[in-house]
Image (cartoon, rainbow, N blue to C red):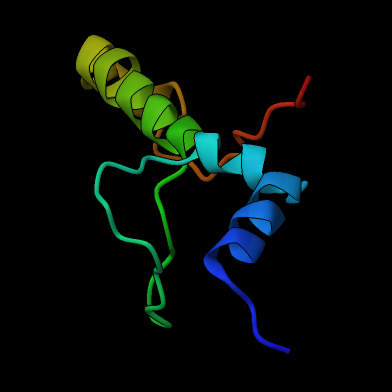
Length: 81
C-alpha cells in the first residue's frame, strides 16, 4: 500500500498522543529526533522545576539550603491532576 501526504496528515489528526507534544520544549523545525544516546526533548515541567530550584532553593537559600536538604536525593514527583 502506498501512503500519501494526505494519509499521513489524517493519521496525525487522529493521533491520540498528539496533545503530549505540547508538554515539551520544541523551538525548531526538526521533524524527527532519532539520537539513541539522548534523553530526548526537554519536558516543560522539568524546565520549570529546574528554574524554580535555581531561583528559590539555590539562589534564595544559598548556604542555608545545605542543611535544609536540597542536596539530598529526594523524590520531587508530584501527583498529576
